[in-house]
Length: 191
Image 1: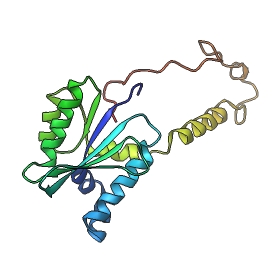
Image 2: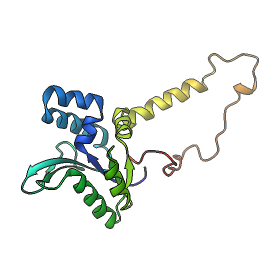
Image 3: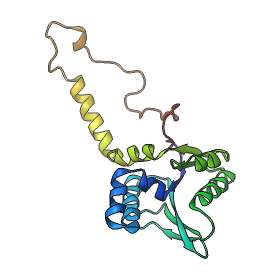
Image 4: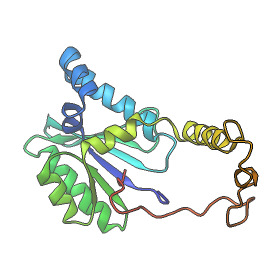
């Protein structure tokens, strides 16, 4: 993904639709479930340029906001009494899109996805976020991709009589220049 994005997360929806987070909530209560989700989000997004906003239902007289410790681009919002987290997420998506920002909303709640999508936000399901949070960090993915490529290009296991495989492979483009970044492909998750 080329640019920074605002990622709005439906907190309790994600917790209750992610088995490990649901177990944390069931064994330790709401606070444990929230802490488990926040820890995974920090680990996943702290080295990115994205802003991650996690919205929970609250019961206070006013909306409250807290920074996400350990992640400069993180924010936790608790909705005020009488306003659901769903309404806050749709409102925040509309505001961010109004400012021209790229927005992704993560929820399995169809009303939230439809409401935010109506304002031009990309939507993702909880399973998409779950897969993203389960991926190894980018630097490890790159390291292991290099190792896999090296193993695939090594001559071990090749027939001695196959001369075509012995020739070095020539890729197009400048070998000293990083490959061009590609845009998001059809069906690829926006988170």
